[in-house]
Amino acid sequence: MKKSILLLFSLFLMISCIPKTKYLNLNSSDITKIEIIPFNSEKYILENEEKDDLISKLNESKKDGPYKYMKTHRILFFYKNGKIDTVLSNGKILQIKSTWYVSDKNYLETYK
Image 1 (tube, rainbow, N blue to C red):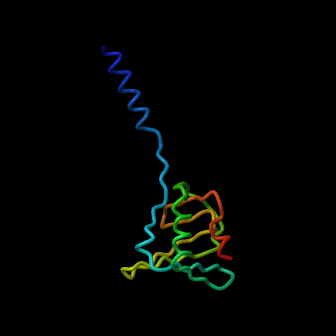
Image 2 (cartoon, rainbow, N blue to C red):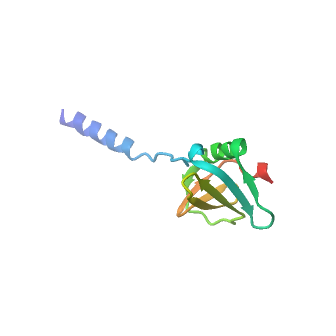
Image 3 (cartoon, rainbow, N blue to C red):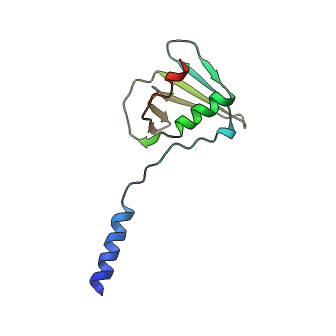
């Protein structure tokens, strides 16, 4: 009896230690527009369907890192409440403050 309880407890402990993948979670309805500013050319503004499309691609990014990478774009998120978030990215890696998110594809290639 004690062995079975100990076995169940150790199994529960092992399952609870499995890392869970965390994804980026941006809410499209809170964001009014997105400005993508490449460091070597002019900025472009995304609104409506383009904005929603980029947010859905970004939300597929998985939390990972830290990474050392070449930051090629600055992305500005403009919120309805007037707040503006600045994010650095190279298209595959997205850094929000001290948290990194990684995407399988370059989500900025569409907007070049």
